[in-house]
Length: 419
Image (cartoon, rainbow, N blue to C red; front, side):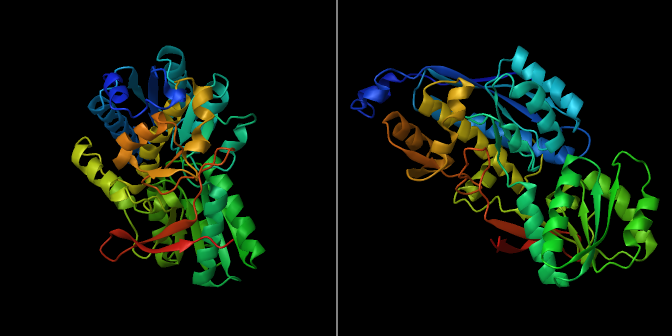
């Protein structure tokens, strides 16, 4: 994709107004260029989600640049070096990450949404080269890659060990805690990790896993797997997949005459397949970490719908990409540097109390506060964010989505995670 250079002009006016005149820590003008790269699946499985992720990050970078320009800050620049297509493939993810790190010299990468891609590129490229990554991947294994401090890999979404527990909690309330469940999962890091967490949580509360059926999402036909999934008359099902490959499984499931969508829960990626170009099945439910609890979420949605490229539909989960751009920028500003290690050292500080609360709508005020030496807490469109030193964002509530009779999907409840 084309390179986008976004710069801002003049700190002089800020000093003249007295905003930082009495702050010894900011006696010198901050001067740095923060280079972002974006990695997402722009083609292949879940391309609609990948394109939306890319747009949200791009819009946040634009908003930051416009704010800096308005403030007349010439020595601070934010740059979108490039957006790269991982194709949902770990190998491709490593290749595009190498390009961003070695050629474009980025400081921060926003992406990928695939856990397998994030794991590959973090292990092989970004962590060894000390580049900060904010991922939309949900595997609980991702933050374990942070073996030293500060963390370089930041998980902007609640991990699957939380999602698995909330799925067990809600499925237990629906089917009864002693019910028999069958799990169907794609055979990759996302599917195997989430299915294992759900199994542990489900059996711990007294339920039975009738069987776990894993399958290769690249298979052209999944008829034999469908027959295995419905065997034994389970009380309910859990499906862990992306919409494009779930579509290949749902058709033979429906043909068995033994599968009921109304007795099926899906992973967070299956919350609304119709909006991602495939089919929804009335009655089917899914859970997804609440990404819209922040006070600024309506403003983010309005900004996206006004400025996103035509044909790239809004998706609430992309608030995680949007927020990550601001967290990285404010951390760099706090550090007075685009050095990824210094940025990483400020992420927890910027996203936790105590501190003056700001959202992206008050970005100008947040910048002034940081430059005046005041402690801030950036609150995202997703909510408080509250990163831990190990790299995880906090999430205390999940949305329950359900497909309606007309094929649309909507949130029917938001439930807290029982500790």
